[in-house]
Image (tube, rainbow, N blue to C red; front, side):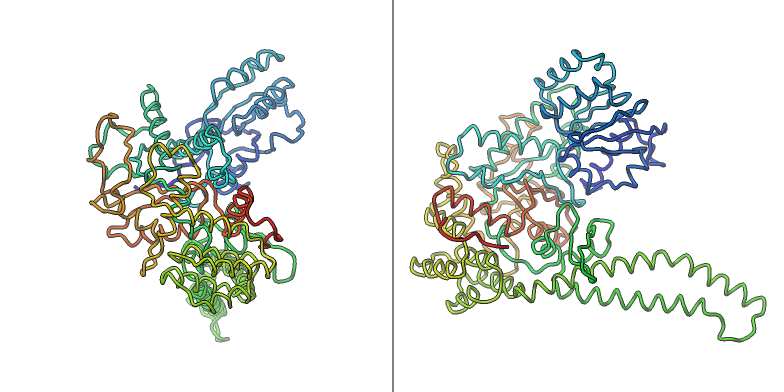
Length: 612
């Protein structure tokens, strides 16, 4: 059985909605149905929304649901399920709600582990107010503080992480707090999956910091009597445990910036897909909102295809639908006017019944076709207006060749596309070329300024590239200095470019780590095994692995996920990869973070900001 993060997190949420009672596997509900109210905060709402809809809430006895920070009226005789982050302001609300009291009983569920000092504050607050403590039925740490968007895709929804980790003015203490936050989120993911992975990462920088802290957190937790990991004992074979591969965004910077021409990455990058929902202009004007998730079979089957193939597939599905509708009409249309005898009548009734039964499915199919026709039409308009196909192809060629014709480059910078498209292309040019002549870089910058593009992000990448120190010079002494290792990693990331078969450096590295065979690309990677004694080398746990969790620190996207899923399905037998990141970013959002770093370094703040 492959690890399925979406399914596991959904099961945990359903158990929580049923007051943490065991759920009957045949009905999917608790044996005793209780009507209740759900109270959540903004971050928990984002966790719930891709997994649970209003119908599901009703199904599990939730009659009303409210945000914790909105004014609420008392509803006596009803239990309330709270699903919130353990923050001081949330705990104050719980104390004041219980003091009124707003509800009969309070079932408190924290999305991550509540720190001891806050638990003590909660207890003393409840004791001080009006018998409130007796109304709190249970307190649970749920370890659900992450957002699962697909079976194999999650985000910690931790914004601006890249800026915070690469800020030249960041203090060591601030960096440690960020690392701690990432470790908390990853611990939640592993607790939900109930697995203790073998951890691999490159030396130096945020990836090693997270790996080392997560290893320690898991070791400490495994010493506890009732720990969350139900796997039996110490697996001698690594094949039954996943490998967790940690990377820093600087490992492959290009993937955060380049244009892609596959369907899912396009919908995300161009239309701003968020929490599995996208809003586009409807055919008759006005905005339309669409769900794009695992229940949409077209999205699941075709999300990884290039856009022209998706357009053909929509056309095919429409023709197939029309054919099936004609077939239903033909079968229910009688026998061409001839007289009926009894046998015909029975035959016709059967046809009629099967036609009636097939109608809801046909209607559903039509809705899916209409939805994707609408989305594809809006995408096509953007593609034509901004020449996005040309950007994707030229960036890909430029990376594969490591060069670009000067006139072609100027053509792009003065041609179609938004300011942000041009800025992204200019940064891709910096990354793709081994060395960029100073005069060329200055001319590109001039062209960007003429197009009124803010050049902060361009200048930031240029500056980092000029530091071009080889990765091997990252000593443990300089690891504390974030700017040092950011420069080193970026310099290496500049070299991590596409090979001819479109396999990304990330996919290549993950493949090597899963195979576990000697490979110069990953020889220097560190290995942590939280289940092994600290002194052991862990060499017996180098693979092969059939499952991997790949986590990108500093922002990831659908393009990177698509490449990893292609890798997993290409393996014989097929392997399984879960991809996660601190936050899911469009190319424009990531470049905005680069621009912010540029401004923090006093670069390029002399132009208008780049529009999307």
